[in-house]
Image 1 (cartoon, rainbow, N blue to C red):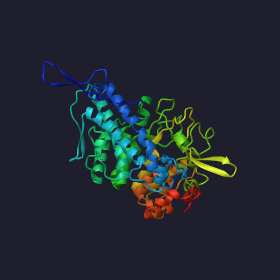
Image 2: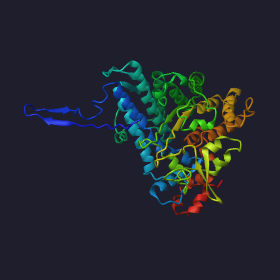
Image 3: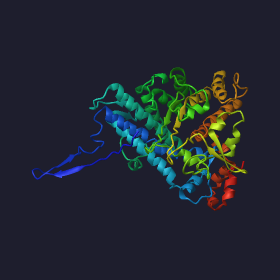
Image 4: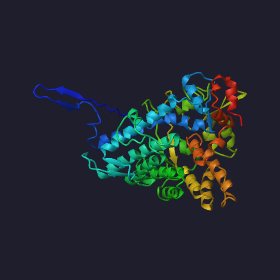
Length: 482
């Protein structure tokens, strides 16, 4: 993928023969007024929407995984301004003007604008009164199949962005026309209900417009692009988040029965850079190493200090470090631990944990190959179990996840709902560790405050801004207090 720069140039030419100004787009420049004239140019614009997923993802883990019980800021005593912000997020004392939060919001709305430009050119309209998507006539010479496929992909990406926004911030600024993020801030904030109605409309239309080919029917060139099945899986999660369990089951069971997606034979295979966009990954944010400006920095960002040349080549930042809680949460038989949690021994008496899942070898600093999965088939199974409740069928879905991890299956329903819910939440935590799902899961369960570190809860209540002056060792020790 390559980045698209939209350059809008307005030429004012005063002619002595008349008293008017003529607006012209110079034909030598690319701009939104003249660019989308054929199928190839529309597809290039869509590529920009996919490329625009990368910048928000760089910040997403900071607002999700870092604030959960899975990870902590590995250099809490640092005075570096960026590190300082990560520590403040970790300890729930972010400044109202924190750049990390603003950059996530800004980058998200920039890509929403990319999607809105494309959707406008394709004649896609949203009616807030009915909460529905429709198509109007356009002049671009493009087949109806391609028009709907491209529109569906852009709708999916826009919905994904808004789903993150609504879960992190509540009712969002709903923007479905091509305006800048700064202009978006001047609009009225929509209600939670209207935001979800908008997301549901986008995903419902996307699932109808896009290809519903099974995984085996997708040609290699199209793997990694959003599909009808990705839209249905994400819509299922949107419904589940709102406790619309019957609607969630309808979408998720369709994916299970008809998509052709499934579990990989081993957990490690899911994340192998030699096995990208496999049949377990319904949608992922893609990265490409090789000095193209499209590589992932996460392997370097999460590597422990003093591990350069050992864990990974180049920069090591120790920003997103596994807690002792998640490390000890895995049993000895669980094959997922070795994939998710790395161990670096800087000395015979010290062990540094690190997120191993996204640590692929790099030849250029901050230029990794590892993709970041957004929704996997394993997630579909566990969401189905959550939506259906404590039944034998639900336990069967959980057993599929357990069996692949080397833990064995469970027969029949659990004796109590509490036992079922504990097993389900435990499997979600270990299966999706460091994939930015834990924080959203805790919010959905309503157990955030009873799960995160007691010291962090106390700090939320007391707003302990004196954290900045705590000695570094004390700050580090607090992460392990329970």
